[in-house]
Image 1 (cartoon, rainbow, N blue to C red):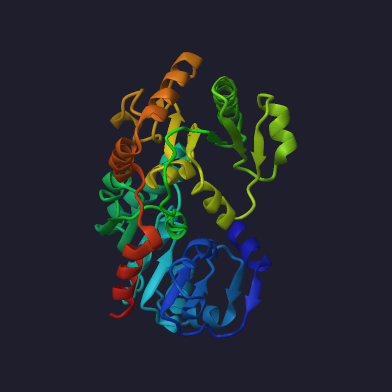
Image 2: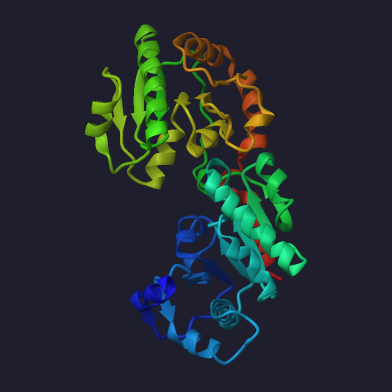
Length: 364
């Protein structure tokens, strides 16, 4: 009934899909695909009922009777477009990894966009549970030809659940906005705090961290910037709910401004955010204060307190961690960042490695 209501509320399209080398699976993938593919080479398969292509729908009624109606629609769409590559950046949708069993001609590429599969226990069990069920019922693993992941932590679990060649290339958006080499100042004169979100547990955690950071920056004459992760709340909300002080509020405006601003930072302080790990991958100094560093599901591989993180929220441990990170020379920090980025989230400047694989796949 729920799907029927979605179907009836969808926009109906009657134009035949165009033949293209690249088929983008899920409109939400467009926020990532635009950094890897020219728009002119792409066709889009909507899977959230934004619109229904009636040309495809009618054809799918009279073929592939062994498949469900949804899978018949997808197969017919793929066959008409006849792409070399089917790409998605919505890597937490199990349905994508079942497509190759429906239509095996294209090369399927999955591109990780965030850490939600690990950070959210419900999503985690839903995602992996669905794929394990598929394997049990079909006697084979769901698959993709190429799976772009952030780092080794993600590979350890994905490789046991999904068949495919895994590449550890970091985040596509972060890679696109390349950080320019600059002369590193020995003294830290500014620190940016990244908000984790506004749900109650995260908010309370952030309030404690930011209170400690405000005290530290005032004591050490360091400029403090607050980056609001969610722009819907605005500056007024954050000033009313966080420690008072002489700090600058930085709103979320757009992707380009987010990364261009990130690339200028000397140092970040946060609880947990993919943006923080992206900064680490680029060699920006970071200090994390999180109970499950670096993320739930992988935190047991790391001690509670490490080189640039701690699960303690006392000011004593906060100050100790920040002073330690600040004291690292640029050369030493570069080695530290490289070591941990390989495990958590890597860096592929300009997406050169990703584009090389895509180029080879599109020529097949």
